[in-house]
Length: 103
Image (cartoon, rainbow, N blue to C red; front, side, top):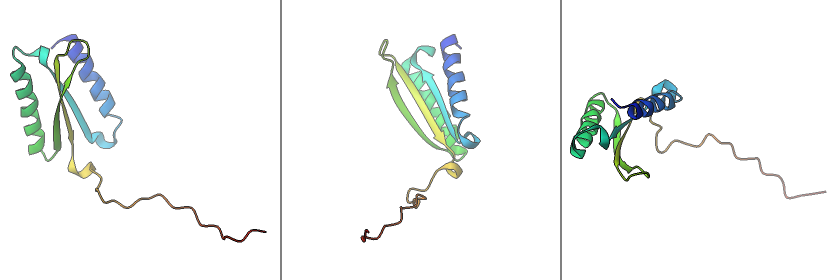
């Protein structure tokens, strides 16, 4: 494993630890760590399949490094227990209306 890959993985582990119960998993697969680009993408897809089998909701995104245009495959997974419902009612209280009469 390259030093830059280790540093990036450490960053994502630290970044992910700020979420409650480690609900969000983020992993990266660098094109440069494999002989062929297809191998990096396959590794990302295989990991996503593992996490899906464990009940996580996964997305794989292809990003490009600005420095050299090489691909970075980003895997994000979240466990269903930590997903927020889409139609969750707002917890924000609306301010009370004031009467139209003024002194």
